[in-house]
Amino acid sequence: MPDECPNQTAQLKSGRFSPAPIWRVLKSTFTMNRYSAPAHVIGESHSGETVLLNLNTGVYFGLDPVGSRAWELLLQHGDLPAVVREMSNEFDVDEPTLNRDLEELLGDLTQRGLLLDNKTP
Image: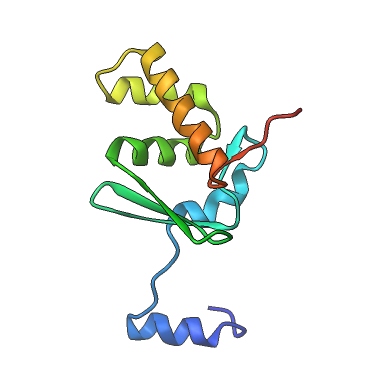
């Protein structure tokens, strides 16, 4: 670890350090994609479910296992068509229904400030 992070080194050695979820670390690489997580959103996954926290508002938002998978894939791929393709192979649902449900989820997350829609106006 770099010298400028002595507290992190001490915490890591003592076992108290809890690294940020991987999507928080990697999300800055997805800014050229249609969707990305804003810097003021943190999340934690446990037992297949995800809780998102908007640090600006203090509001929590829970995702069930299907929503959690959509969130994970969205942050990985950054666009809806790729998420629909992958999820349609993983779940027993037709693509039009999945696309409609995901558009509704993405709209809700965007409205709550938990997701950025980077489309060009």
